[in-house]
Image 1: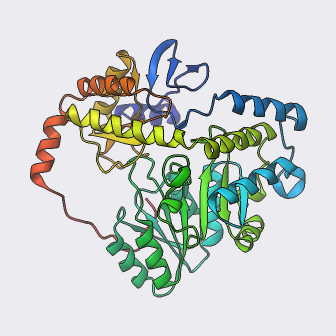
Image 2: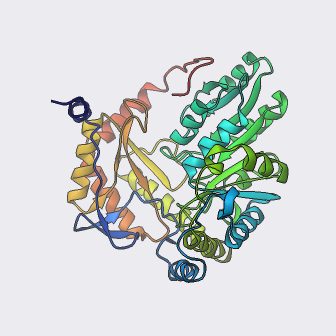
Image 3: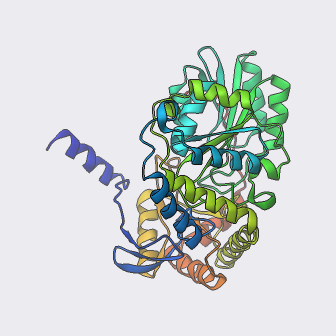
Length: 408
C-alpha cells in the first residue's frame, strides 16, 4: 500500500473521509443531489440571489461586453472599470472611504492578516475563527494569541501579556460554524485601550444581519471604529470573490503589501457584474433580509420543539452539535434518505468532539419546509434531546487559558 493510500485509509478509519456530491441545476431551496431531489439546508446562498434572473442577466451581459476573464493581476492590467464600480458600491454600503476587491474570502483573510501583523507583533485571533484567518496568522511573521471564543477577559489578559506588541485583533463577525455574533463593541473598546487595530470578517453577516443587511459592524454601530471589514461576494450576494472595506490609506497599503492580491488574477468581469446586480437587489429589497431572519427563527423554534438545541446561534447558521464524526455522518445520511441535505461538518473544520450538522437557512425556504426539516433531523438525531437535558442539568465547564500560542 502506498503512503497516500495509507493516509486515505487513516482518514476513513477516523470517520473523516470526504467526497464531493453533485448538484444538478442552479442553487435553490430544492436541488437534485446525485440525481435525487432534496431540500438544500447547507448552502450559503442566503438571499437566494445566485440564480436570480437579474443577477444571471448581469453576468451574461458582462461576458459579452468585457469578456470572461480579466487576463492579469490587479496591479498589471487586470483592473477594469467594472472592478472599480463594484468597489465604490461596496464602500458606500459599508460606510468606508475605500474598498479593495480580492479573489476569494480565503485569499482576503490570508493576505490581509499577514500584511498587517509583522515580525515582532502579536495578532489576537478568536479560537473559532475561520480557517482562512487561522492560515493568515500562520503566514504572518507575528506571534499569535488565540483567545477563548468570545471571551473578552481572556483577550484582555493576552493584550496585557503582549506588553505593547499587539498589532491586530481579528474576528469573524458571525461565526461560520456556530451562528453566533462576535462581541464587537467590547473588542473595539479593548482595541482602543491597548492601541491595536481591529479586523472583522463579515462573510456570513452581510445580507443577514444589521440595518439593511449591512452586517455585524453596522449592527453594532461601529462603522467608524473597525480598521478593516472583510466580506465575500460568494454567499448572500450569490457570486464569487471578496473585498476589504477600509480607509483610503489602508487600501493603498493593502494594494502594496497583500501578497494574495498582488499575485492573483483579478476577478472575472461576469462575477463582478453579478455581484453588482445582487448588491442592488440587497439595497432595493431589504425584505429579503427580513425573510431570512424570520426563516432562521422558524427553524430554531421548530428544532427546539423537537428537543434539539442550537447552541448560541442568533443567525441563519444553525448548528446541531452531535459530537462524534461517525455518528454525525450517519445522521447526515439518515436525513438525506428522507429528502433533507444537512452536511456533516467534522474536524479539522470544527474542534474534535464537536462534529455537527451545520444548517444554513435561505430566504427562499418556506416555513413549512423548515418545520418538515426539523422533524426529519429529530429522527436523525434521536439521542440529542436526552443529551441536551443532561447538559442543562450539568452547567457549563471550566474555561481554559492558553496564553500565547500557535493558531489552532
